[in-house]
Amino acid sequence: MTAPTDVPIAPDARLHVATHGSAAEPGATGRAGAKAILLGEHAVVYGRPAIAIPVNALGVEAHAQPAEGRGHLASTLFHGPIARAPERLHVTLTAVRAALAAAGRPGAALDISIDSSIPAERGLGSSAAVSAAVIEAVLGACGFAADDETMHELIQTAERAAHGAPSGLDARTVRARAAVWFDQGRIEPVSVGRDLVFVIADTGVRGRTREAVAAVAQRRESDPRAVEAALDELGALATDLRSDVSTGDREAIGSAMSRAHVLLTGLGVGDPALDHLVQAATAGGALGAKLTGGGRGGCVLGLARDAASAAELGDRLTRAGAAAVWTTTVEGAA
Ligand code: MEV
Image 1 (spheres, protein in one colour):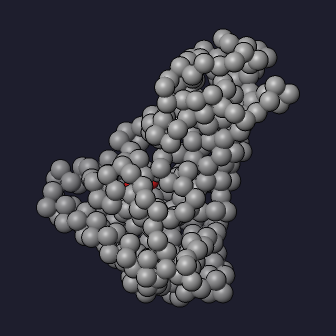
Image 2: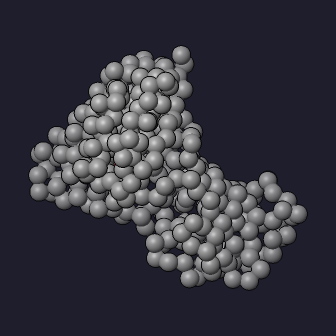
């Protein structure tokens, strides 16, 4: 292994030598944020477009530095030698290995710490965000930084370990700090006409993205016409939503969200706990509400009329049994 003071030579044309950091402070930090899918989850796996928003209140920071001996991992899920990390950390370990391989240091021993406020398995992009932060930190500790495409490919390597055939939506959006339009693997910024205030409520039930994605695939095999019709409608809703977001038509956005919840439930990725919070959000004045992310648990995303009603909506969802509630605002031109 190259000593930390050696000048690194990028092993991969798409990596470049990092310019940050100093010999006095060995190691590097990586960061990523949570995301919520406004519309298009699952349909995006079948080539339809989606819109996602950042959840600014939640994020992850990872730090990596050359280890004295064997590498250690410090996270809320595990503290100890990386070699003894449990199976449930296999996505994170895949991210570490992918970054080390890209840096040309497959056997390097690093101490890695992960500090995340994103609840795991709640549809808020925790796995992709942790992978993104860890990959950035590991590459940085080896003296490199990656361009956007290389980062994306590395995060996708870890996401494939999470659930087989990820669309790339999560990998792209956990590094984007604004609302994005995702189509055919690429993102573009979405123009936002007016501030949109969202409330996110956690059912407390672990989302099961891998199972949910597999369930949609199975249903598509057994009932292709119905599933394709639902996917087409979700795609059309996302396309219309993009212009509703750009004009700031909150009523239209809310109604598209509520329709998406019905379609997603019909695809088999709903859950009674999600329906309960969607109903509570609607009764509490949300303009629309839906599950967000893989479903079968996880979170509900509701659109509030404005910031004041978002606070009331949050209280209402807490009283309805939400395990946690967050508010996130997507800032518009007006
Ligand atoms: C998970 O956050 C989003 C899904 O559409 C899966 C994917 O896009 O890979 C359910």
